[in-house]
Amino acid sequence: MSSLSQQTSLVSSGFITTAQGSLVSVSSLLTVPLSALPAQTLKVSLSGTLVQITLRQRSTGLYAGFDVGTTRLLSGVLCQDRTWLVRDAAIGLPGDFLFVDTQGQQDPDTTGLGSRFFLLYAPIWSS
Image 1 (tube, rainbow, N blue to C red):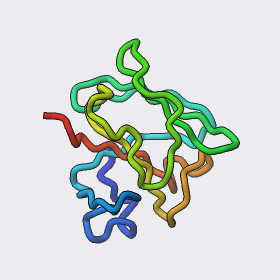
Image 2 (cartoon, rainbow, N blue to C red; image 1 turned 45 degrees about the horizontal axis):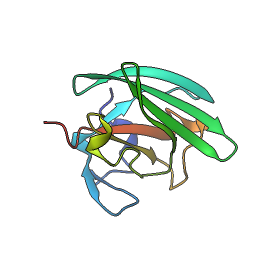
Image 3 (cartoon, one colour; image 1 turned 60 degrees about the horizontal axis):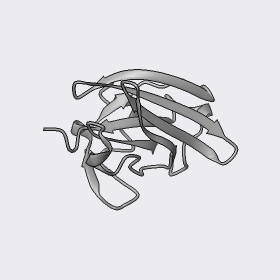
Image 4 (cartoon, rainbow, N blue to C red; image 1 turned 90 degrees about the horizontal axis):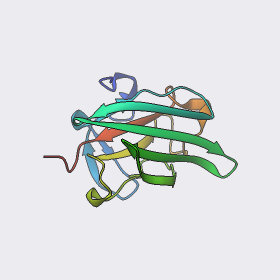
């Protein structure tokens, strides 16, 4: 996971403002490595939990799915700039995710994944 050094202009104050208006400290976020592919599945260990993330580009946007083990916890989540994807600890994931556009406020698409659009993880409700 990176230190977010590529996002210095976006977060020069040390915080990201989400679409909901909350401030999130950059030091508490981890970057999930992505490739510029229209369909991808990756497994990452986050807060001691192996999470499988599936991303699919559709004509209506980029969508995410989240699995832990063999259990699908979320499916068909529309990915939007600076908008939390999980939003509830009861879902069973160890934290939440959001995409950030480093060049503006556009919703992510696969052409810029890993370069313009970053998927960030915040362990906001893990102990």
